[in-house]
Length: 300
Image: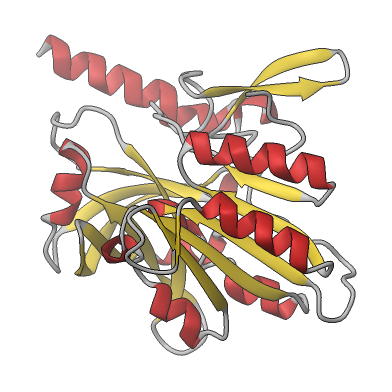
């Protein structure tokens, strides 16, 4: 009973913190954040422990922007105790126009994602979102300008939602996708069908260039003067290398950072990153001030 009471108190502190000042809230306006029970429509096995989860979560899907995330939790369970932050991979219309469905691309790495992978159509999942600061797109852009999307492994999950926004802005999206092996290059065919140029790198050399995705980025920066902006998501070591490379090149870049999170709305202060400020440095909450940050701002 004591553990249950503590959980209720923790959730009250976290989720009701939306009523606090703007300093502790998502940049989205309060009405755009929803906490709802979503029905599982599909949970497709993509292989190599990757799953594409589709949820009926109309309010979240309608309010979401590329780069944002949602907190997923299993209502009525204490294992796992805390919700899981997951990038919003895409939103889909059920009737041809209005966004109704929310897609989450995830990889099984622990207890929480094992439970997500086991969800069946018709089951329900509690969803809090959309959360965090979305990506932004430069404007205006020169004709033929490229937008590079640098993905490391499951970091590719955040980019399907971004593609149409880049195309509407007149940018040519190019996906630089790195993974351990060809089996983990999930959804690359989906990007190709959307007209996205896909370049791959694998650590074992089973597809594309052998090595890391940073090699592809270095080649792209050196061969194409039309790169207007770079977006990156993946492991911390990859983001650090990408950030340093882009700062040196002078190309504008936005990094999507990942972190363990207790609440997702800035109340628990459990996810922070050191960032550059005029006065020196400060600690920013990834869930609120991020997860997207200018590459020039993050201090590794």
